[in-house]
Image (cartoon, rainbow, N blue to C red; front, top):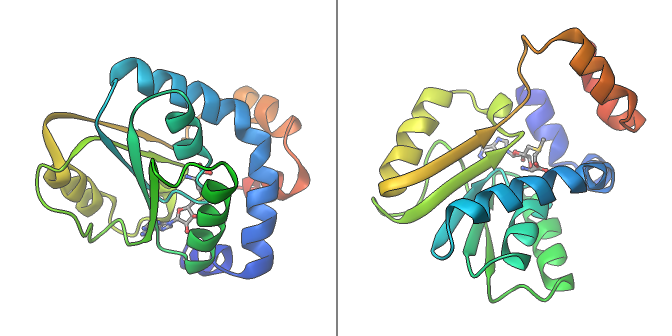
Length: 172
Ligand SMILES: C[S@@+](CC[C@H](N)C(=O)[O-])C[C@H]1O[C@@H](n2cnc3c(N)ncnc32)[C@H](O)[C@@H]1O
C-alpha cells in the first residue's frame, strides 16, 4: 500500500490515474447528486481528493463549498489545475494534507466525503476518529471504497468496462 501511495504521487502515475479516472465521471456525478440531496449549503471536506472530480461535480450542483485534501503534492497540483479550468476556485479549496492528522478545528464540517482513498490509510480507525472530531454535531460522513468481499460477478462486470490501467490493480 505504501508503494502505491508513493507511486500515485509520481508524475506519470498521477497523470495516468487522472486521465483514466475520468472513466468514473458518471460515478462522481451520481455520488454528487446523492450528496447534494442530503445537504443544501455548508462546508464539505473531501479526503484523498485526487484530481478533484468529486468536489467539481458537487459544487456544480449546489451552493456547497468544498475543501479537498490529498497527501500527494502531484495530485494537489493536478486538482488545483482542474478546479481552475472549471472556474470553481471560489467554491473549492485544495490543500496538501494527511487523513490521519486533519489540520482543521473540531466541529468544523457539515459533511466529510472520501472515495477510493480508504484502502491507502494505514490507520483507518484513527482517520475515522479524526473525521468524527472535525464533523459538526449531526454532521454526515460518506466514505466509499471497493470491498474485498464484493461478489466476483460484480467485480468482473465492473472491471470489464475499465481501461487497462484500472484493471491492473484487481489481480488479488
Ligand atoms: C485512488 S485515488 C482516489 C482519488 C479520488 N478520491 C477519486 O475518487 O478519484 C486515492 C487518493 O487518496 C490519496 N491518499 C492516500 N493516502 C492518503 C492520506 N493518508 N491522506 C490523504 N490522501 C491520501 C492518494 O494520494 C490518492 O490521490
